[in-house]
Length: 462
Ligand code: AMP
Ligand code: ZN
Image (cartoon, rainbow, N blue to C red):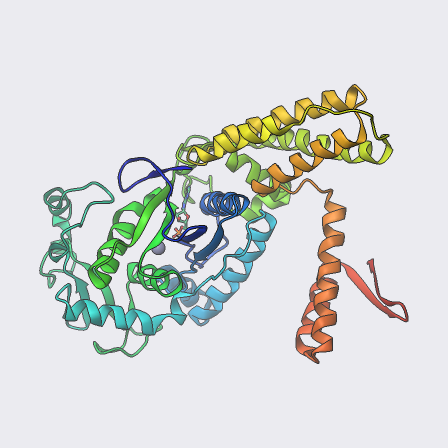
């Protein structure tokens, strides 16, 4: 398997730290609003990376944070006159709903910055102790020049950075030893959330969050660290500096960055009026269409979002879903045939070759389309039941790697409801009434009515 590594600027063979295991960290969203379709790109792409590793029998430990303390969250909280945690909790819940709609599985762990403050204080203190950081008037800065590898990810050299940063000298940060130095801890301001620290009450800088959460949940060195390309500099460059200065070990072996999503060939922005949340899209499309659209391009290519391209994605996805449904119907009616049939494994080989080449989902989807075309012709020519079954199971499996569910919506609803009912029964058996009620409320929210009968729990749609 080959992966393009931003650190080396080329594709490299993937070799995990530990055989059969992948440790991945992906920078998650800042939760002050509903997520937009740009945020959806890394979520969908890295979920697909995770699914492909699992398909290849790796055990994946996938960590993705929620940044729940930040200027934008504080601003939104002040505007509504509520605590910052009200805003962040609300949008974490909304984000999880959008993720579920897009088929993005929950991470192994979703740490929240505000729950990891102790670890951040320890890392900042350690950096000061080692001479990589210093405190001035309650602010702690990272001493960039003390870290030899600074610039290695973004391929910038320190002198270029220095000239680019000269303006900082006049923006109130003139107490820094060097304009390139960045903040690890900032002092409390009135009306802002804060935590006690050896440098006075305050809150962490953004970059230190990810260094600490990655180290805590995945260890000093991870296999893959990912995010959108805007994070290469300064966020990821600073994460490397902090983590490697602190541990003395390489922070991540592979750095993966997705390119940006633009709208009608322009940068998405509120002021241009071309800003869409995932929720906006869900009003018009099943979010599987958005997922399919995102995967139709290579992740390192910029992707343009437009009404026409979404319609094309919808039609393409329908072709796949229709083929799956035709195969299902066919399997029910078809007779077992005598003799052998040609195995469809060549399509799996094409799919894998594409995914092994730096997760080329666009070519992987082409392989799925070839399979669909072939399956349609085999059904039309009256193939046997076994062959139709093998075509269906391959189609379901490959779509599953892409996170596309080929089951009709009704069938997947049935499965979800049955699973929730089981979970509720288990909660009741444990006398966990709060959980049982919570599950019943969730089912009610989905329009499902439960009836306790002598034959067990039955359900129907309201
Ligand atoms: P943020 O909440 O801004 O920290 O962003 C969360 C994730 O979304 C990061 O990995 C960003 O790089 C990514 N991201 C933000 N905007 C876009 C966009 N327009 N296209 C692709 N990725 C984006
Ligand atoms: Zn991060």
